[in-house]
Length: 389
Image 1 (cartoon, rainbow, N blue to C red):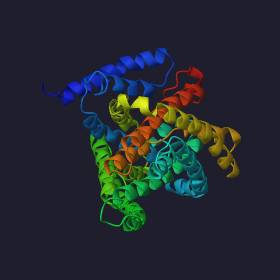
Image 2: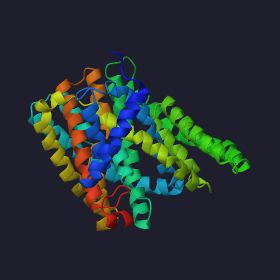
Image 3: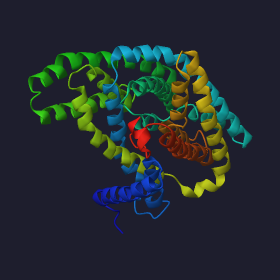
Image 4: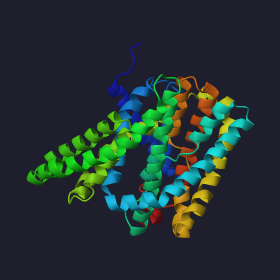
């Protein structure tokens, strides 16, 4: 039997997503949960209607790129630098505490020290996609909340990239320390390139032909994807490259027009991303890791709101905002999934440890997004009051 075409796969994903999203809204659940469950149902470990979740995942990564680009459009460079300086200690201290929790749970269930260390590292991060996808961009309170969340997530992403480099170099002949040194140089170099190209190439062209909306749309996509690819080639990530591209355009008078134009494109790819998360998980492994995964998930989702609340209060944030940020960052990260898969492929951890990280990540995705949608304002809130807040 021939594998299904990409067109048939897209048909299954979006028709199924429409049905599951309808059911989720009637059940007052997050739409993200619907997409993940649909992936589990249709994927190779369910009905096997979509047997290549890797292909879907690769396509869906454009959604993450567009998400980070649009978020960069809402941040002025000076505001971003100010917030990063303020949240550096919060990010480092919280990361250390969450790593200890992951380490302790893994050791408790008999995993090796190496597997426990990597489990602790995976527990360190929060999801950029969920944290930002569920964040409103209206009302000054939410914009301020978004600045804090983005600055924490940006620092976490840099830590995650450094960790992925270490894992990649652990079984290679190159020097991961040299790679990380080059990484530290790559970020300011990428910022400089973005500033120069934006000031002397992109903005002059857009100003000259701004009456042709199709041209502005095309140039914006080219700028976003071009900077994303440059970030990847420089050893950072496509997501960071796209974010920097967005920040460079944030002061442009057409930033809001660009944001409105690209949101539907972003949502198209993000649906594919969450579907691929569910489709790529081996349901047969749940029986071996469900107990440590459940314990680790409960501990992290209980600890993260408290830890972020305490640390952010020390930086002068209000109790309400600190508490909300803690809940919005209460899950593990898509970087945790990448770390689990890469470490298993490199032979650093076994399949059981890898699926411990993956299942815990998916569980925290599901529960955390549900709590945020039920409790706080978000673009997909099922409560009218929260959608207007």
